[in-house]
Amino acid sequence: MSLIIYAIPAFMVLLLIELAVDLRRRTGFYRLNDAIGSLSTGLLSQTMGFATRFVSFLAYATLWTVLPHGELSMTPWLWVVAFVFYDFCYYWNHRMQHTINVLWGIHVVHHQSEEYNLTTALRQPFNGFLIGSVFYLPLLFIGFPPEVVVTVGSLNLIYQYWVHTRFIGTLGWAEKIFVTPMNHRVHHAINDPYIDRNFGGVFILWDRVFGTYQAELDEEPCVYGVRKPLHSWNPFFANLHVHWQLLKDAWHADSWWDKLRIWFMPTGWRPADVNARYPLPRCLPESQQKYDARPPAALATLVLIVHVLLMGFTVWFLLFVDVSRFNMALLHFIPLGGGLWMNARLLEQGTGAIWQACLFWLICAALPWLVSGWMLPAQSTTLACLLIALLVPLLSGRRLLSQTV
Image (cartoon, rainbow, N blue to C red; front, side):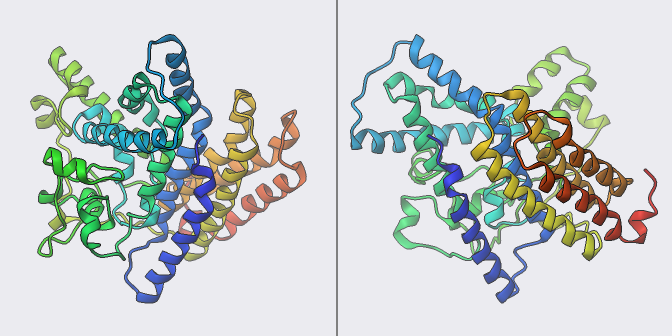
């Protein structure tokens, strides 16, 4: 059983507390655009689960029935051992995602934020099931049932939420056993001493045993992000941009061997001929310039309001949409996925974003009357979408309105 949805209220309360502390202390650890960018990828990760995590669990359940495996008794110790063993598998899964190009293309989403706060914890990819699930197959072969694997996996992810903060310093003896805010800040930093360190999810013991541990250094303040900056708030692009770059590099490579091996080479590797002809900018800690495109204040406020509505829609979607009815789930996903896309376009002040957003929300206003079996109340859905479509041009500012479609 996935427990993530039940943890969402606690996530939001802790996030609001951290935001209040940030505002009170004026530390500047939060930016509206960055926070919405992170939260948008989290919403996308959870809602795209109707097409992804279901496939992953189905694969586990199928393998459980067709392949030989151990038989373990359902005792409290089974859950404890499964929790620890899951984190061991997580360590290797996580480490490989930082080591191999194609896997980094999935995990990079979690590292793209140039800030480090509790919204960063919610930056998760929607396509991690494609390869990451393979690393947990030993749990099945030993005899842990699929529902146990899914449950301890949820607990593992829930634990990792609180360590994404800069407001907690060192925690003494706990640093030697558990993943803490201090040693996870190191993991997210792009400073040379911190690259590819501290891969554990719950236990830092694995890093100490396998030589990947690094403590935070007073003389080396953490700088966050990735060395090839995303420079976008679009959650779909965030999930696809590394694989898109790999595809372009494979296309441009002269050698067929390079076209094939680029996917499985160490993270960041590119064919020499491609790197010479198409160099990519790199972000180093000492030269980082944070991506901080900001729309007019009124439009930013509207984007925030729409994002809060989309968060509420996400909770409703996860609780009430029957994912086994794929076509209906997909139709209900349109206002959510498209809304996240349009909010990103408005934050980035893209050409024509205002009129594209108006058209999109007008289409969403019509959806409840065009789709048979629409589950949300048609009147309130239509009214909300029409109101958003009306407010977008009113709050956009002259410069954005003057842009052509």
